[in-house]
Image 1 (cartoon, protein in one colour):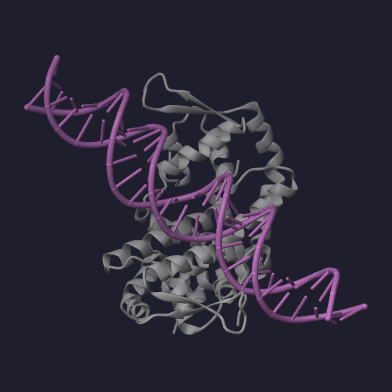
Image 2 (tube, rainbow over the protein chains, first blue to last red; image 1 turned 180 degrees about the vertical axis):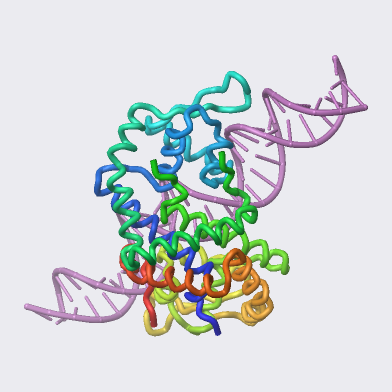
Amino acid sequence: MKDNNDMPGHLARRFQQIAVAVFLTEVGEAGFDLTPVQYAALATIKANPGLDQVTLAGLIAYDRTTITGVVDRLVQKGLAERRASSRDRRARELEITDAGRRTLRKITPAVDSAQQIMLRGLSAKESEELMRLLHKAIAACNELSRAPLREG
Amino acid sequence: MKDNNDMPGHLARRFQQIAVAVFLTEVGEAGFDLTPVQYAALATIKANPGLDQVTLAGLIAYDRTTITGVVDRLVQKGLAERRASSRDRRARELEITDAGRRTLRKITPAVDSAQQIMLRGLSAKESEELMRLLHKAIAACNELSRAPLREG
DNA sequence: TACTGATAGTCAGCATACTGAGCAATATCG
DNA sequence: CGATATTGCTCAGTATGCTGACTATCAGTA
């Protein structure tokens, strides 16, 4: 029988599990309390001031029901603001706060370090190839999850 | 600024997200109600009759606090049994049931199909290379998560 | 303008994953 | 043998992710 550990789905789960653990360790040791998901959301809000939650979700491939809680926690930590949109009363405009900007700036070394650690078993060439293959596989399946990537 | 979508951690999350969605779709369309996590646990119980929960968790790199709920659901669905161990009264011996064996046998085509779909963007060579690189990266970080792989 | 459909957001419920704590039982060592 | 450490398991709490349902609002059209 085929071993679980030879199935791409199982490897995907395990790599993600390690990626999260490494991220939390590095960021935690740097003195910050931010999850990978919260980090990606905050960085995307900073890069797209005033965007609404659905757009934010699309840019990082989160489900719209997940983004609510993530933004809740960013707001609660004082890193982002959620305002009613003037043009569309259904939508919420998101903005990063000064504290959020400060956090992003200071947290960068820990985030970079985490990305390196999770690839420490691979050479530079292999790392690049892994990223390329993941990108390609993901692109071909983008529409198969409820939360596909929606680029600007 | 570096795009989130160029960070290995983000790609890991997205690939896992797609892998789960594809698995659930294929298995669901085949008429089964089993998650990827439950499938891996059930297959491992079948391959290692009478194993305890900690060993099971180690074989598939699950956290010990997660395995409790997973086994709960397998037992509740009638696919596995949880018995007190005679040798160690702390431990629970796990066994697959006949229904579990039947389910595993019938679900295999859907599981295989899911593994193929999530790699549909890659050639056979590329798929193999992706698996190799994931394996290598994971092996080098095995101890960095709370739930490392513990082989027999 | 009234109807219809689509969209933004939220909520309840379920299934992973983790932290940290705790209980019961076993193993080990002085 | 008895104190101590370790181990197997569970639980409470928190954070993703998802399904499906719901409200409020907007857009397009008859």
